[in-house]
Image (tube, rainbow, N blue to C red; front, side, top):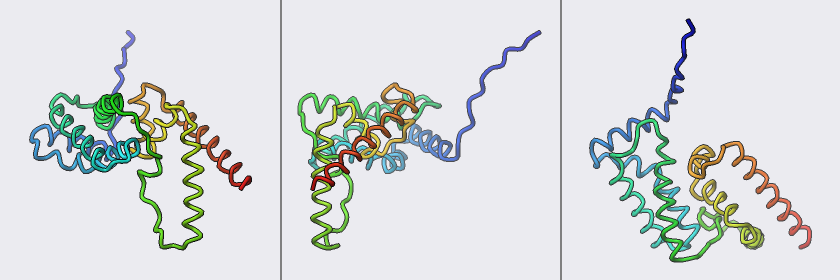
Length: 194
């Protein structure tokens, strides 16, 4: 008699176990939500800042996302991906906000910039590179810019982005690497012209 083997869930990594414990604690007491907030607030903020260019608006939207996450946490299903669940809330909030207001800020503005005191020549070079990069990014379509924001401003893993966008992780990696190679080629071409 043939036995039907049931698929066993893959064992959780140490990081996944730690996160599951944080989620369970936060579900039991809202006062224990802080570690999850600390872990994910900066990537959410960076994403909003990269779209808005306004620290106040980025902070406001970030707080709205985490308030909604805290209120919805009892409905979070064990075994689901917390980053995907959180960024699903975040994307709904972003879509609502950006439907009302259309503004893009260069992605690199969401990251810390090098110390400007390193010298006037290097500051001019960085400024020129940022301007060239901003022009290249402005020429991308919305989907490509969104992929860059999710990966670099929000610092999401490919797995989390794949869950959010309903695509395979491999396809997203290939798309991003091709996009980065295309951008690098354009930057090099612009450098040779200057």
